[in-house]
Image (cartoon, rainbow, N blue to C red; front, side):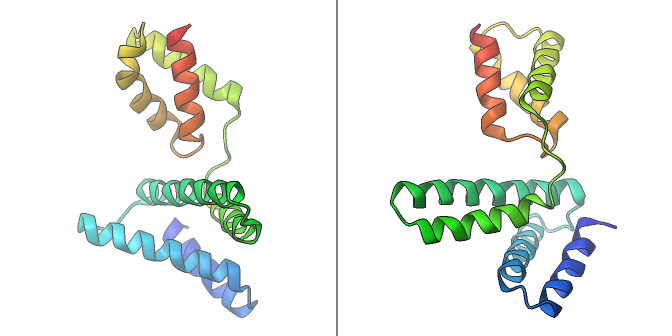
Length: 148
């Protein structure tokens, strides 16, 4: 079953179970997917939908952190609830060791040797992880391994 169909099914289930937070989050996600389709003027496949979900996860994570920093704990909790719901649609996240192994392999294959080569390494690593790794962590590991 494709992600679009899964979202529609989960939305119906959330309606029947009266899960308002889950329903609202899924509706926001479906809206973001529809907006992306309108922008690109084509239907999105599962990989592109994963990209939209990844963007939504990143937004929720950053918003929750901002709310925590400003002592708005009730809003931070709401963002974290939405974050947990969205992460359920992403593939299982890779551990730091797994991501490090991928980064090392890409650096070896591309012949990258300095920070100037970061532009070659990052896209390859992100395409191999396909939503299964946080971009911030990947960026940090690439920087660490290229500097060292």
